[in-house]
Every structure is written in C-alpha cells, then in structure tokens.
Length: 192
Length: 185
Image (cartoon, rainbow over all chains, first blue to last red; front, side, top):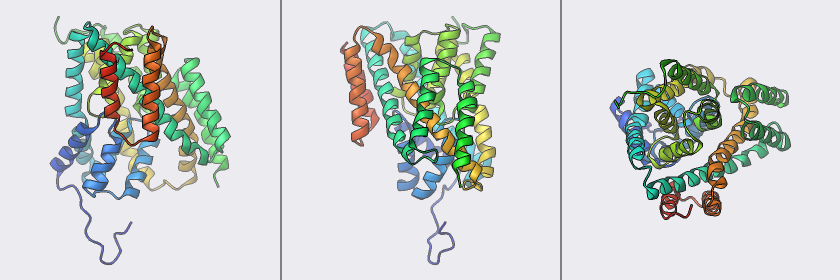
C-alpha cells in the first residue's frame, strides 16, 4: 500500500524457503487451542512481514475460502513471496511437526485410555474445547450486527443453520447449498 | 497387530476419503465447522467410533500444539489407524488447498466487487451457526453424563474467561485436564 511513498524503508520479508518453513513451524508449535492469535503476533508484530491491515485482508479471504483458515493463510502468505514452493513450505512448516506430535499423543492415549485419571483429564479438556468453540462463536456473532443482510435476518440465518445441523442433523451439503444460496442472493440484492 | 492393519475394508477407506474430500470444499469458516457432519458420518451412519471417541479425538487435538484441523487426522486414526489418518487428512486438505491457491490470485483483485462482498456477507451467518452447532455437539456427551454439573461449570468458566479476558486458551485446557483428572467431570 505504501510502497510508493517517499522515504519508505524496504519492508522485511522472509529470506528463504527455510526461513518461511521454520517461522510457520515455530508459530504452530506455540498454538495450543488454535494458531491464529500466534500467527498474527509472529507475522505482524515480531517479523513485520505483514502490516496489520494486510493480515486482516488475508484472514478475511482465508475465511471465505473453504478449508482450515490458518492453513489457507499460510498458503496465501507463502505463495505471495515464493509462489507454489513458498506455499508448500509455509503449510509444511505449520503441519508436519504438529501432526507427528498429535499422532504420538493419539497412539499413547490408546494405551492409557483405561486409566481413570487419563480418561478424566481428556473429558475435562473436551468440555473446555466445547466451551472455547462456543466462546469463539459468541465473539464472532457480534460482527453480524453490521451485516449487509441486517442483524435480524443474519441472526435468523445463523439460527436456522444451527437448528438444521445440530438438532435436525441434516447433511451439511444440503444446508450450505440451500440456506447459503438464499443468504448470498439476499446479500447480493442488498449490496449497492 | 501390524501398525498398518486397518479396521476398515479398502472400500470403506475410500468412502471415508471421499466423504472428507466433499466436506473440504464445504468447510467455509474452518474445518471445525464440518465436525457435525463428520460426526453424522463416522458415528451416526457407520458406527466406526463412539460419541465419546469422537469428542476425545477433538480434545486430543486441542491439547496438542498446532492448528485445530489436526483433529481430522485424529478422527481418521481412531477410525482406521494410520491409513485412516492419511485418508481423512489428505481428503480434508487437497481440495481446499488447490482451490485456495487458484482463488487467491483471482479473488484478491476482486475483493471489492459486488459478487465477492455478497458472497462473504451471505455466508458469514452460516459460519457462526455452524460454530454454535459444533460447540453444541461437542458439549452433548458431557452434559448427558452423570457429572453434568461439573462439565457445565467448566464450560461456563471457559466461555466467560474467553469473552472477558485475553488469557491464552492454553490455561483453560490445562484447568480442564486437572479438573477432569480429579474426577469432577
């Protein structure tokens, strides 16, 4: 955005594919219960590879696209600096080591799941995980107030999605195709 | 039993892979929003794992460092070992990754167009509805259990702390582990 401004200092950028890989590895390994907050801290504040506005823009796109948000973000970020190889380096850094760790934990859990304390600890963590997801939903629900659909209609779509998926157990494909296309059409109609 | 022994037939593994392939492209708002449909498929329809195993899979991924999407690999592992993990993880990542790579260059130049803005605005409420559905389905096994009060209290504390403070979720996950190990849930 400010590239053409006089006196602008050259922006820091990842030095190499290895730099990209290890930066994403580092931020993934710090992320317990989610990586997004750590990614923002590392990429924007610590490394200065993105401005805050660029990060938000990239995050918005990664949320609109299907797939895990932080994986999409890593893909976009790597692609921006080193093309396809960069995208693969960033995603590899984010997934490979954590995948090995979580598989090791899963295998270990299978051996110890009959120990009441281990099973209990996991039940406790599971209840917290449910709470964390509900809290994230509650936080993001505030953004519906400024929805192009208008708050009541946006709320109704959220509620209808919840009811069809959680209570009626309809398949997701039908819900997204049905409710989603109506919502997008209404948003199109209300967009200037 | 060999590490690569799978509880599922090749046809079932392929079905698992195919189901996650489709879900990948529907995971608007993150992989976790497709958890209810994964649950419907592997627990409800095929009975490959139990309700409790499904919740435990997500808890294990949450307790480990890294992106939340790894819960998909844990579910695959619990269904059919390493091959199951490979099926669910590659199914989840391949389509969305390719789409993202193509769409990024195309979409970033059109982020201000009417179509793109309508697409974002229209799907946002669905994303939030799906997150609530996910939280609901994950909470169910604990709320139905004999020690529902402890679980409900733990969930309420988690929500309150996340809403009102900037504390890392890591501490809450730790608290959950301690409370659970003591047998209060």
